[in-house]
Length: 117
Length: 113
Image (tube, rainbow over all chains, first blue to last red; front, side, top):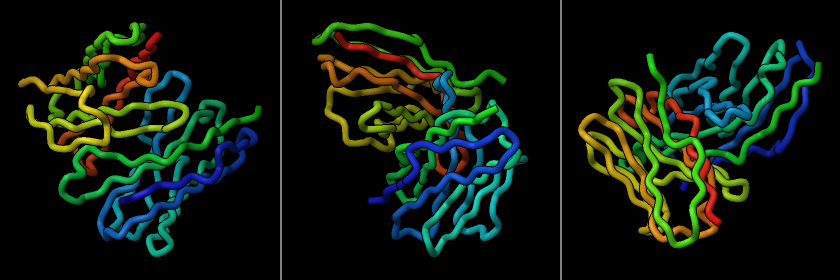
């Protein structure tokens, strides 16, 4: 079974600085999707960035980018120019393409990010 | 366009009762998944529906069930509530359920007393 590990329960960053959140996963599959979701106190999970495993190019979305290392099974999230609104829980998630995996996102335990003014 | 709508936002129930939660997906999305979120266990997958059929199910007891209607709206039911069922229940919708990206609702906070 696939697993997702986020080894940093909490992280802190100064406003305008850069922070990197770590995520590793375990799988025997070659094709899958990886996601980073953000959950602010409002509770709604918001998609930050998405990576398809067969694409070698790292995904970027404005200030958010990933470092996808398929062989190392690592998927870290870099937030540049951090803003106060970035403070939230961040979850790394894995989505298999295998049959019987529809709709099933496997989440890590999350990293709580604080942004200091 | 309207997002994923979950009702109610908050719910307090007594042990032994049953509860029904509702999720209206984004228009055009045919897949709806449900998750339970607790501080101890994190986010756990309950089940996924696509075109009124359950395609996938997580490791939860039979007290947890769901259904999906022809308009893609989904309901989740928990019977014989236990204290441990207290959690945030999230639903997510997507076009087809795999890799397309999932849009989540704001969840229903269920408290069992």
